[in-house]
Amino acid sequence: MVVFQDLPFDVVCLIIGYLPIRSILHLHQVSKHLQRITHERSIWSQAYHISSLVRPQGPFPWQTAKTLESILVRSARLTLNWPPNPDAAPVHTRARVINAGADVPMMLTSKLLCGRWLLVLSGLRQIVCYDLDRAENSTANEPFSIVYEPEAETAWIVSFEIAIPLANIDADRVPCLFLAVVVHQYAGLLLPKVRTLYKTDFAEGTFGTFLLLSQANTEFTDTRLIIGPRLLAMYEPAAIPQHAIFIDIDTYRCYKFPQQTITDAEIQLHQTVGESYCFKFQEIFTTSTHVLLFRRYGKRGVGYRSRDDGMYIEAYKVPSSQEHDRSDLPNAALQSVVKTLHLSHATVLTDKDPFTDIYPQGMKDKDRKFPDFTLLRDSTFNRFTGTTRINFASVSKEYLCVIVLRLDPGPYGSGSVTLEPSKNIIHIGKRRYPLPITIQPSFNGHTRGLGIYPVDPRRCVIALEIDDEANTQTSVTLDVPCFRELGSSPSYNILAYDMYRGRIVFSRPSGALVVDFL
Image (cartoon, rainbow, N blue to C red; front, side, top):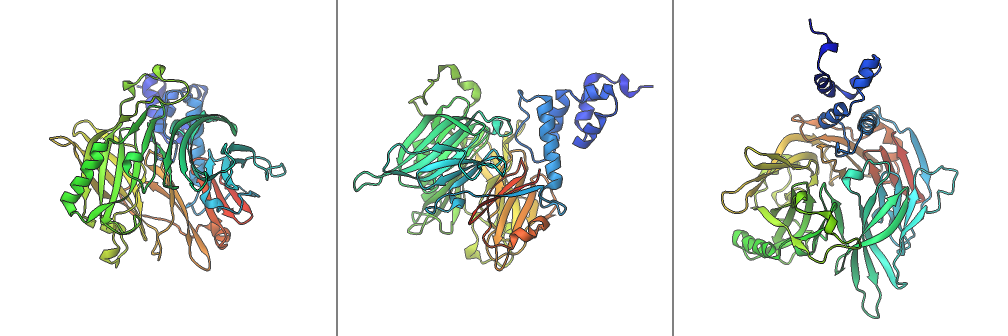
């Protein structure tokens, strides 16, 4: 008769790794033998891989068993205590007096860093940092530190964006962050705008020396800074794709879109839908395998934010990390040589019918458009078919739908791109205007969304969790009990939130309200 103690050690670890987090913790208390086994990293690594909890990307080789266990335990606790769970309730709520100046609304000029540090543009001259974890009776009303200030006295900051490498998002200490700043420089009658990208070391709210990565003149103030598992992307939605820049966060090598493919895309658009159409604006997403370029097009002579008639999607292959050696890179800045990405897939989409499910019933045909996208899951590659799948979320006036982007290899040259709405549709209620839901991608398919629906005389806070593998319709509670009193105030807006640490920051006229769920 075979007993549990007789099973091979590796087999026991494999079995335990498939148990729920709570069950693994219970085994830890059964005996010294199981206590020793449940401290094995392979168990927590396996549990991390298969968990359905909202958690940061991982596991990484340098993460210990204790670190992985801590992340999963915290994620499990937060899932029980986070909306839309009807029993969710904040464990701590406190007000912060934050002075962003009267020049620009704080909603538009603030970023939350690691769930703790709030970066705010103050007086158009400084980006300052507030430590939200400081004691309430301390001098927390004063900025913790000054992050950035233009050198020229005649310059002022128009906008800024920050991004953190995903591998460091759950570290006790974030080694670095990237800062993109658009600055107006007064020079006589000219007001040139300069877009600059920096990398800086970061530890406990202290910012180190700024390393200049990229600098160029720009006509736009709307600069997007996004980061994926491999590449950092900086682009402007209204500019041509050639202005976008991509930086490998491991080697700091710089990439751009090839000029020829941008020209070829315009030729193909005219051949497909006619000369009267042109590209209006763009969205860019980065995964571990591809850079995705979504270009909306419509009739000429209409604003770039107008109703789009179709979409042109291109996929560019991300260079392998084995292709470069970091030892030959300079210490001060990027190499002067900028390499181009390789186009692997391209398709012009004109048919909106596949997205019928995410449109509210009764919507007029002229109001239908291609949905907006938010990345949910990193690339998954099928080595037998050569197909790559990437999951997105899309929010319409009434539904949230998971959409699968499929990259199929082509027999000659580049492959094709297909968008497939899945059966995972969340009904978020019939509303007159689209819900401004903010979704922070987790890259593992399990993520959270949060937003406020501005309806008079009260506001409804919507909170939802998204599982991109679910095949059944999921309902969501719009009027979350723990936000019932808060949502009745028209002066509250969601300033920022951290889905990993369970913190929501609301903006209000006197500053910010910090709500913690852990």
